[in-house]
Length: 336
Image (cartoon, rainbow, N blue to C red):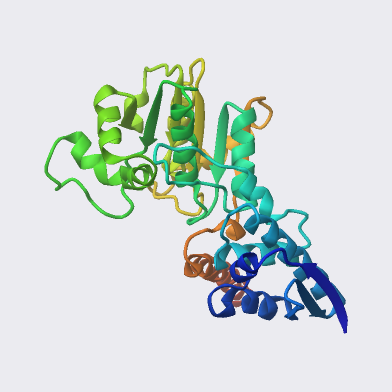
């Protein structure tokens, strides 16, 4: 049996570390296979297998560093860091708490929730065009909107332009009443949802009226040059290669672009290639352009989202194997 000691500075940080009904510390113990007990009121004793104890000690010290800065840590963040520890990652959860994105709601604190998201923040500071590609639930759109709003708040740019391809995901919106912008409004709902969390509704409406925030379907980008702007192209997997070229060549002086998309959810007609899938190879040698690929471990939505993604991936592999086996059986039948 191996033991480590961790010093506790106050009862308050002990309460925050253990959580309501000891839920947090029990989760850590169950996940890492260790036992944690309080000794003399100011030390934690962590016992168990040496490797597991070392992992738990590192995790608890990270959590205490965050708590001592006045922050709270929830179970989903603890689970994420446990996954990192088990993978022998050199990343520490408290690194994420050193990064804050300022938005227009004063009580809203936005930080990267995963190290993949931290990569996004680091990359946009050193590049003019950034592609963020990953599965559903990784916070691509939310983070892009937060970065753009922060740049507007700091007066680093003059306006935000939100762009989406109007490609139907199996539904028809043609029956909806209203003008073109009212018809395409449902396509922009993910962007509106993110903005409403970061900016008071009245300010958002005022910015729309003044053209400081602009919402436009991709087709309306043709012929424009966008200077001093932060442009977000969301759902970019539903662009063709020609549309992607058209969009990227709108880029002007003093501007930044974030392109987000999920290459596993292409809604384009069959035999139409996604511009997002092809673009990485085309632009790979251009300085000032970077590609960040988020993964399943970066999913920040409900636990079930990650499990749904894994289930679909497994089903896809099974389908591919089934098709291969059908081909083999057909070939054997023909040989007979």
